[in-house]
Image 1 (cartoon, rainbow, N blue to C red):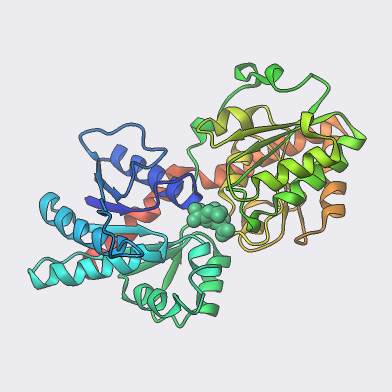
Image 2 (cartoon, rainbow, N blue to C red; image 1 turned 60 degrees about the horizontal axis):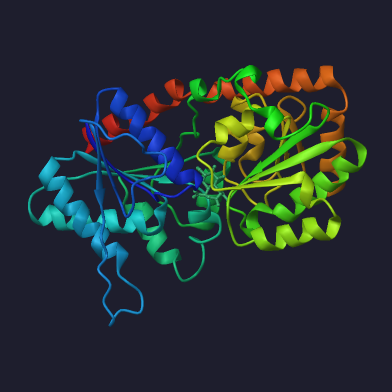
Amino acid sequence: MKIGIVCYPTFGGSGVVATELGLELSKRGHEVHFITYNQPVRLELLSNNVHYHEVNVPEYPLFHYQPYELALSSKLVDMVKLHKIEILHVHYAIPHAYAAYMAKMMLQEEGVHIPIVTTLHGTDITLVGSHPFYKPAVTFSINKSDAVTTVSQSLKEDTIRLFDIKNDISVVPNFIDLDKYNHHFTDCQRAMMANDDEKIITHISNLRPVKRAQDVISIFYNIQKVMPAKLMLVGEGPDREQIEIRCQELGILDKVIFFGRSNEIDKILCFSDLFLLPSETESFGLAALEAMASGVPVISSNTGGIPEVNIHGVSGFLSPVGDIEDMTKNALYILSDSERLSTFKKCARKEALKYDLHKIVPQYEAIYEDTLAKC
Ligand code: GMT
């Protein structure tokens, strides 16, 4: 198949999933065209069946807001015609599903039919999409998609609860390339990060308020009072400065390593003992799955789709949002006994096997085939 993928090219989970999906589809013999405003961060290698088409939005002083949707829909029209793309898979409803529908309508005028598969990722529904300013457009573009998927059962239920949806929604969970997370501890450069007796705690996110990174600091602060530990913080975002200030106030700045945006998450996770994800809301929690695939148990909140991924008492523990005491207690329970820690590590990796990309990507292929057959 010739598949066009529209996504955010940034470090966010939706862009990562879209990129990994495109790369795997290309390995499975499909021709994949990424259409977005920057080369996706995890798209390092282009080849004869992986292409990247940049959407340019010329700056014009009349516009207070540059019309990205317009540029995207025009680019989609051109690329579908030029490369004979058969299906468009858009990740994140805003504005991608909307722009894809506009492209579809324009192409229809020229006798070209292009079906649209929309994958909802989370904040496009739970935070941004349900905002009254966007809701009519998001509802419209979901209902006009030829197939709709969500990354968890929880997000499917949120979508149905928050929007007036007329079409079926299939749940296709996020996935992981397990080979990438198959390091042995001998490959790791743990010694550069911490002493042998220090436990390594990790958090990866875009440091937005929804991630509750302040809770990460509080939990880590409690842990390091009981046992030697270091905190690895990966990601950049609006809360970064406040977090640094808080670490300084608490006197733990020397125990926290800020990695910023890193493309080497697998290497950092490989020497981690515990992963913290205390988010306010999370449709899936791809970062938790990446941790589990590296054999790192997860202490998380029990919100959204996280309980579908992090299994309480098996791959880690779940607590109510904001319950720092319970999260600390669970973290110490896992970390304080080396045999228990090693059992949790093994179980975390085992749970992650359920999300092997070789199991999940065929589900998307089946959706493409069904959609093409129907349209
Ligand atoms: O978590 C974010 O703020 C980024 C966001 C995105 O759109 O990239 O992540 C969402 O999609 C990921 C991939 O499907 C999910 O793993 C995240 O749970 C989801 N984030 C939220 O729901 C807050």
